Image 1 (cartoon, rainbow, N blue to C red):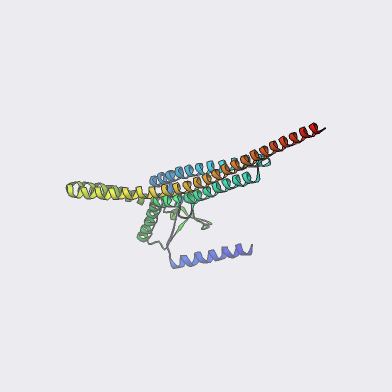
Image 2 (image 1 turned 90 degrees about the vertical axis):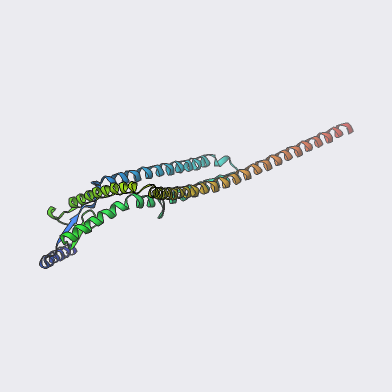
Length: 274
């Protein structure tokens, strides 16, 4: 309670000090701004769709592993020690593969991080740039984000510049579209030579994009190949083990048969001697 009272007193003193210094303060609502930018909503939807697809695949793999664990638990009583170890090793391999795939999608430098950086960060940068421009023009000393962890006990709507930020972004986007159209017309007017340069640049960009995609697919393929190789090795080991057991069983049956024949001969000889 004392800490709360002290915080209020300090906030009050700070407010008085700010007023005395005639400092200008404004705030924004970042969530409101982003929700009013169509490009952000489109980028977020694309990201969400990808994330949902990745999660679905991970869930499918996880359920498959749980099925293997359940089957092993149900059949453990009738399996040999070697078969139990093989199945446990198979489950372990699949689990490690799932962890690597999860890291590939959602790790610190995974696909989600790269896609978010590619789709959303440019829009966030655009918002920050607009805020800086407005703050500079209107000579604001501080601009706070209402949707951040900063606790705002009270905020007067007249200090909210969120709509102004959205308006500036829309204006900048329209200006950029006009500049792009003008640049495209100029490129066409410059002749065939420059058009070829454009094609080369586009080709290089497309080639880089394909290379990144190919590298990613190659990583996934390598993980799958390693998993398949381990599974193949386990299957081969299991086959040899079964053949060995079959051979031992056949040898035991043959030995038992010979023992029975020997006993029958001895019994016949005993009967003849009698």
